[in-house]
Each structure stands twice: as structure tokens, then as C-alpha cells.
Image (cartoon, rainbow, N blue to C red; front, side, top):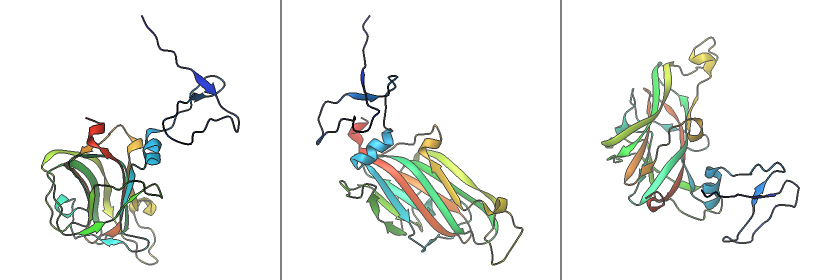
Length: 232
């Protein structure tokens, strides 16, 4: 019976951590004085490599006026991320902020992944690298506020859903209204919150939908992107 021995170098004091000027060096594992290893989160490693990207629909104080739809509709998605063949993404977070819901009624939002979706209408969204020096460029295409696209057709997975039974847009000086004391403006999903790991291997798509009758707001999606050969 064989065994593998792992040893770490105790590095808890300032100045005791080894630094390398380039990739490819052989380093000691870093650990505490009771031999507990220090490790970095996988997502941090991807961001440091320049593989994490951000797409924001709406900017600063200018929201998107979502195409009118009273229910979630992929053909009129708030945001669609189109992943080309040869590329794979893992969504990290989705944030949907509603400035206004329009007519007081049910509000719902959701995220789906799969393939077969096609964007139509809408506005192109600039994708930025989360590293400020942008060492790489995303191969994905992002569109906001679709007006008549094609919904997903194959292997459709809904991995997030949220909403309100009665969404209310606050008027000036209105008191004593619902939405749990107006605590719900930001609807969000994070990869680190649950055990669902959506992986979109191109060609495939990510759809974020919202259902309101005259909604305005912002939507931000962050993901990790890499060549599909990295996952076989």
C-alpha cells in the first residue's frame, strides 16, 4: 500500500512568504504553524488569470426599459449570453435591480441555460475583463432587452427563480405599502450560495428573464470563461 506525503512550509510572519517573478517556479506549500494549508478559492485563481468577465445592462443612473412582458419570456429576455462553440462559461453571479415595476402586479425573474437560443432585437452589451489590464477578451456575445429572439430548445435548465407576488413601484411620499417594507429591489443569484453549478459549453446560451408590465432596471452577469478543451 502506497501513500503520498504532503508537506508545507510554515509561513505566518510578514516577509516569510516566497514570491516568484514569473510562472513556472517550484514552490513550497504554505501552511500555519499547526500544519493547516493556506489555499486560494478557485474563482480567485480564475480572476487572477484574467478569465473572469462582466456584462452590465444599463449604466450608472440610466436603466434599461425592459420590453413589456407580464411574465418571464426568453424571446424577450432581459439579458442573453451567447457562448460560441469551443468556449465554456460558468456563471458566477447574476444581479437584477428593478428601479420600477410598472403596473402593480406579479413580478418574476429567472435564469436558464441550454442551447438553441438566438438573440433578436435588443442592444449589444460590452463585456469587460474583471482584471483591469484585460489580459484576455471574451468570445461571448451579450445582448440586453431582446424583442423577439428564439428561446432555448435543448437541455434547458432553470437554475434560478425569484420574484414578488405583488410588486409595487413606490410613488412620491407613499407610506404603508407592501414588498416587505420595500426590501426587494435587488434580485440575485450567486454560484457560491448553493450546490447548483450551471456549466454552459458552447454552442450554448444563458438567458436571464424578467416579468413585469412596465419595468425598468439594471442587470449584471459575471462569469468565468475558458476553452472547452479544459473540461473535455
